Amino acid sequence: YGVILAGGGGARLWPISRKVKPKQFRAISGGQTLFDATYKRALSLLTAEDIFVLTTSEYADVIKEGRHDIAEEQFILEPFQNGNAAAIGLAALKLCKRFPDETVLLCSSDAYIKEEDHFGIKVRRAEKIVHEHPDNAVLIGVVPSYPETAYGYIKLGKKLGEDYFQSAGFMEKPDLKTAEQFSASSGYLWNIFLVVWKLDALIKSYRKFWGPQMAVLEKIAHHAPASSLEEREEYARAR
Figure 1 (tube, rainbow, N blue to C red):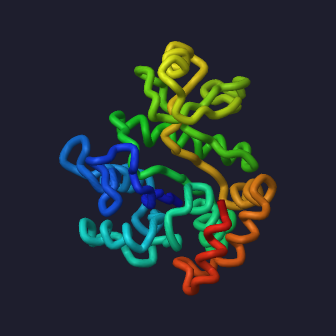
Figure 2: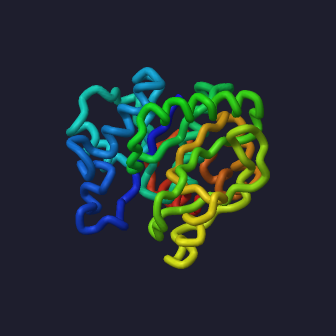
């Protein structure tokens, strides 16, 4: 299964990206929007029935204006933008009720990926690794081509196999000097938020490392978007 994260406000690309229509719904490179390109990539690996869109009701309406091929039941709506962690936790709980033993591909809707063929190969490889190590997630990164300060970076740790490593840490939006060091090193990747994970392992990890917030999400998982002010206030505490 695939989950496309499409609820972000895209503040970093203002004024091109605005709250009413953030960057994932803009044709920044080429004729199609970043969301459409992401959805097309997902369709190269999965059927439409196996792809879910995680967003708010506001942006679901934006998506529906441009696409009429995504069924209503494929949308997972969060009450409001509350960060990736809360949104993913909510989506995992909802999907795990239906597909408890399945593997999920989590991908951002605003990443530009030039080598489309390599995308499918890397995702299938990540899926195989997850099946061999079901308690672990595989995060796919990109080799930096220049020192970018607006991206997050993955620090590579111990080599675990021919083409995968243990992660040794993450760095969000470094300063230019640090970004130059990262891009000149072979030990860092750009983090484009492309993750393959088994749903039950994802939820287990959330409960272990994000227990109080996950307890809040489990209380409201059957209501998304939340149907009362009390539930919306509960969701606000899941940060």
